[in-house]
Image (cartoon, rainbow, N blue to C red; front, side, top):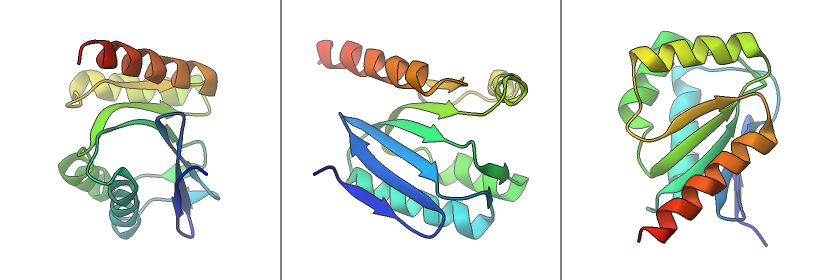
Length: 131
């Protein structure tokens, strides 16, 4: 059985060596919620880096205070992150933001779950060959 952790707004699980997460319902992010999210992701990671598929299609609002906290405290235990968004406009906005502020690990935005998972698996395979 795959490992799973969840709370009232987000669920995390490991599947085929990839960490998955999705919001259980339409969610407005707050500072408290981002702290809970990071705490859950850290707990399921158990001190090991992950390839993270992060479905944010139900995320409605992500204020600056929460984004700043995530930038400072939310980047541990990650090899790479693939974020699923629900529109090409959101993808464009994310990609523009990423050009201004780069992550400490590979980070891409997708509108297709299949392409996001494929990208993470390719990175994982490539990194495991180099070990």
